[in-house]
Amino acid sequence: MEDDALILDLQPLPDGIDERLAAQLTFIAEADRLKTVLRASPLAAADRRENDAEHSWHLALMVVLLAEYADAPIDVGHAVKLVVVHDLVEVYAGDSPVYDPQAVLDQQAREEAAADRLFSLLPADQAREIRELWDEFEAGATPEARFGKGIDRLQPMLLNWLAGGGTWSMPGATEARVRAREAGVVAASAALGDAAGLMVDEGVRRGWIRTSEG
Amino acid sequence: MEDDALILDLQPLPDGIDERLAAQLTFIAEADRLKTVLRASPLAAADRRENDAEHSWHLALMVVLLAEYADAPIDVGHAVKLVVVHDLVEVYAGDSPVYDPQAVLDQQAREEAAADRLFSLLPADQAREIRELWDEFEAGATPEARFGKGIDRLQPMLLNWLAGGGTWSMPGATEARVRAREAGVVAASAALGDAAGLMVDEGVRRGWIRTSEG
Image 1: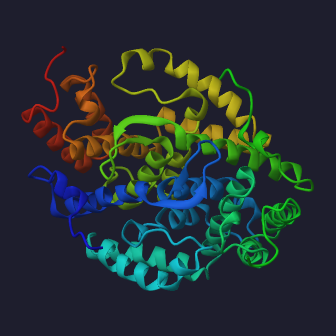
Image 2: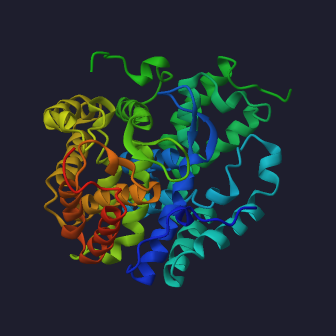
Image 3: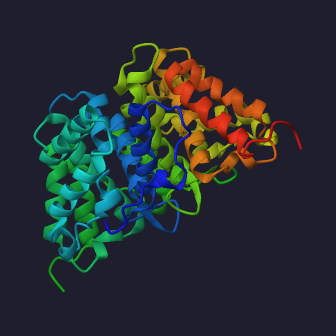
């Protein structure tokens, strides 16, 4: 967050665009940065890591396709909106890999600061609206947020499975920590939780997940 | 489409996953390929081209943020679903840059074949449902599809603007063809169409868009 330049400073909008829309386009241009924030997860279809924008899209697709497994009824459109915005603050805060103990230490403070900075680019009413969606996802208390968070746990498990390890082989990953992620899937959906459990069971059996530290 | 291998063949799912869910996970794994399909558009935040998954996420975000400008009332959640699935067939059909006259010649036939192949991975009821979303977007006849298509026209214009040219400098791009894309924005929203028009006007003035062939 050392650099205050905005993406739109590259090429200020032409004159004549209404102030409200210009603020929204400024935010939309800034969001382009999410395509450059790398996660720890490996892609299945290419030999590189996934970025946040791709990840957010994949979650949105999964929410549409797997909504039938939500244990509480969900408004699919609302759940999709939540996952579309859930990682936006990482344009400034960066990704915090769950199996990296250093990264998660100050994650909340970094993300709160990023949210204040990023959302303030929007018109005030919309800044509140997007902030509320982000807060709702983070709290995980509504059926849609719980389901979105469950899918956000399941998707990297599927990528790890396809990679034969992936982030499961990071130094900080142990079976107990992977099981804690699995619990987030179970909380959203018993059926999806069962599938995640089978992947973790078999991942442990194959030695892709360590049963203890070190 | 010469290679029939599925992403999931890399690492077949563990035993015990229900047949319906296994089909859905097979589709979700196959969709990972969308992250490797490059569009012609340049990112603003990095020196590389955009991929289809990132693009689809950016459209979803724009639909959420710009829905207020839709000239006909839209169900935002439904419009977001449309843009999330609208490029899926490109996992097999590839991207067809709009300013590449060769690519667009057989685009429809390639995409129909890809849709048949890809959607058939899903359980039959869901294959129909996703196919209907894709058909709805392609036809552009509902308010949500018209708005989604308008956003799909506006987003690359914004990237071109930020790049000071982008795909506007492709050999096949002329002002007339760029104006034809602008018309897709106007059809969705007069306000967004005005903003697109200002970018194109100024792009022509700066020489980023050619007024005629060659």
